[in-house]
Image (cartoon, rainbow, N blue to C red):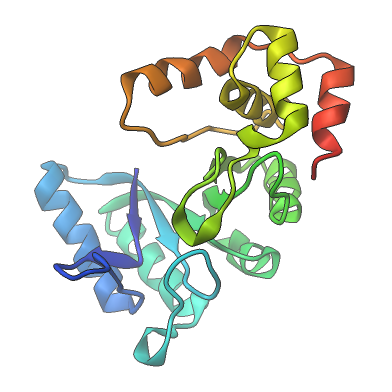
Length: 212
């Protein structure tokens, strides 16, 4: 899986938008070369209409249809296998459905339900839901749900960490979910994996649901 729509730069903010169709194609070819592949299995288009992160300005304000047309062409050429979306609104997801979307990456957690409509749409259409920042982020002051008293209480009751409880809630909330919690720590990775073993009862789920 790869993502296009931004590129690494040598600057204080090491990321710059690359939203134009020709830039998307350039990024795919770069991925193919760097990964040594003939085809990138899934490519997620990162939109930049809203935060968190960079917001498109000037020539980086590109219609979604133009981007999808380029990705469909790349798929028809066999250079990518499937198309995903990232950081999109409900309206944009509905607009993109005819292109054959296989996954959606949006910010989402037990305390951030702003993408609930997109999740429901994905579930109805059999599209994988891939929430990012499920444990919060320092990026744009996105808080960690693990600090919530309710989360900590339920974690103590289940003999699990607050982070594992947050991830377990996401897994229990919808079966179309594929989690991608980021970490640089082996201990945190092991704890994240433990989330799959945490079984939350109806009462705990209801308490966590109320946080949203």
